[in-house]
Length: 180
Image (cartoon, rainbow, N blue to C red; front, side, top):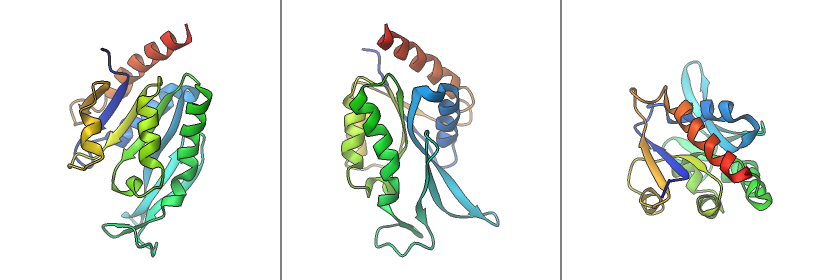
């Protein structure tokens, strides 16, 4: 069985998000979902912003957020990921032949109500999914990595520059078959 879902894992700074961002650019309007970017002030990371492929932006976590839900020094506002999840849900509901992007299946995102259900619905759908996923063990993430419809890819310095093109080729071929 050819896997239609790709999970990118790797150490922090290995290039997982860069792969997703470049892939989104290559896919253009054939992609839906979100990626996260760092918010930096004077060279210091202050938080994370979720950016949808539709161009909506929302701060997901920040050092100044007084939230009870925290990841390290960052307070998390789970409600700020709503637009990103809605974009994925809309594509799933319409059955559009698009690639779903999720950056990432990680601690902050797992605080978001409905996030796990949306990820499972995306993976179970007929659409291809490319997501980044935490490397460390987690009760939700571990079974995802073992699914038969998943290709788990460790991103590193040797493969991160070629992965966007490789994934683009596989996904484009998959989407073409869906349309025919």
